[in-house]
Amino acid sequence: MNDDSETAGAQDRQEPKIPQAAQGNKDAGKQDGGRKRFQIDIFRDWCKACGICAAFCPRHCIQLDEEGSPFVEDSSRCTGCGWCELHCPDFAISVRPLNERKDGVAEHND
Image 1 (cartoon, rainbow, N blue to C red):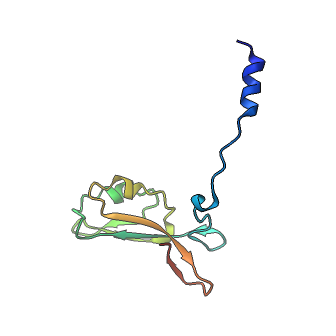
Image 2: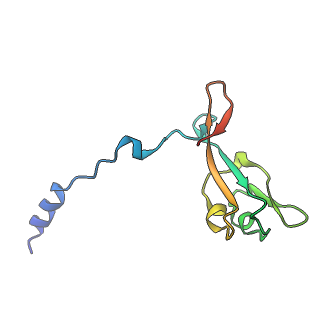
Image 3: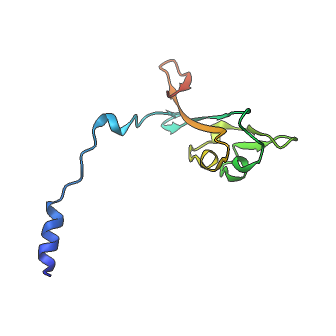
């Protein structure tokens, strides 16, 4: 095969266009000079207190109390990586970006 024909074929291909609506809100959760903020919700009725969420949190936002139940220590440190949410065997944790209203108050991005 000729290398020139392969190169020419690659040049003819274009990146697919993604509709603006499908791209989502790129600014969702941005606050404090562009830094995103996140809300961490723990659903107590579903949680069996295994501690996996706290163990996987790279920023130590989630800690365990004296009974071994997780609680949010500092959500301002959360980067939204989702490791806690992905590894929870009970689907008992949710991480969502916060929106900042014009008055500076943070709210959920629903």
